[in-house]
Length: 496
Image (tube, rainbow, N blue to C red; front, side):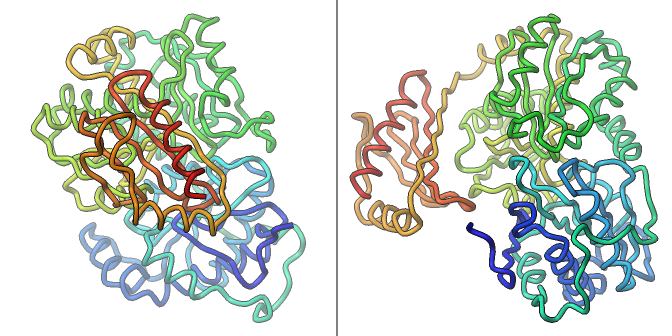
């Protein structure tokens, strides 16, 4: 059945993730929680007595007698019960806990860590995976997803099943005496200070909202209500099957929102994936706007209307339009491997005002260093309000100044050994021409990115989580990305 071996839990920067009742059980959550407790008490940099954490809280004038951890969960099946397992383990080891009263989005948990000076946070979630999955994320004291050092520290401390003092009941513990907190109210109050609420209130916008039965339920609703924004909401509340859809805020998942925006003649549709770290946007015509379309426009808004300045970062397969916008304002751009953990590390430096990835993540300065889908949608509202123009006109004006880029991506399933062999063969004998255009440069930051003489590019990289080769292409004309993808598929099959 592909069940994870019971003593071989894999903890990554995305945390623990797997099928409910297979790798995701109360017992395995207990094991990870024990490892987190060990990390908190023993890690010399990120732990409670660690150099990094101590410096972090000292700069904020905070002191703690015991470690503090924020705990929350999304709306998935058993998430609340698994969060209780974490509470019990940590409390039993002398760790103070603040548990969210309501389902807790990952970015809200990250902000809460910074707000309280906590040593970290646990969120029970599988992000945008389907309803059969669940998991556990660890957020470190800097308010972002666990980096490789933190992951290594936790993973090495995962105990064997045989070392557990007792077996957990099938559905976990009853909740221990955890302090509960309305973290939703506090996070939304923070957002009202981050964005221009006054402008949004005056704009008389009509918005569609689709939380996809995830943790964004009542976050977008409550914020829009506080701003006096008219809105229509669908797919709120809790449905552990997510309405039969994969809650990833992509075009398939947002068909209902698209129909709502068109039917009600709304200005915009806002959505998040199930733990709210990524955004989904529906334009006034009902069209799904890709992150590669949305992110550059938000960046332009931040620079032009908010007058921010500094460095910008993006993943290697994110649109080059980010570079055009940044360079038009004399801002340097840093390219990272795929994975928001790399962007998060740069954002924590305080030198970067914006970070983004093509799969729907945006981070801005003076907030959290990680991606926030709730904030991304609200920033679009702020942009429309401040500009005093509908989104359609803003986009029209934007593309008078900048080039239009077109992109396409596909995933090609291959066995693990085939993926390794294909990547090795590409390294030894890379194509020197694609789509009848010579390859100008090959970037091997993450897989292979073939940059052509005319600025178009094709990228191939192994997925970090599945047996897939991800293929991406971008060009300044609409037909070329598909041609580049087709050529890549031929190359892959020839090398298989």
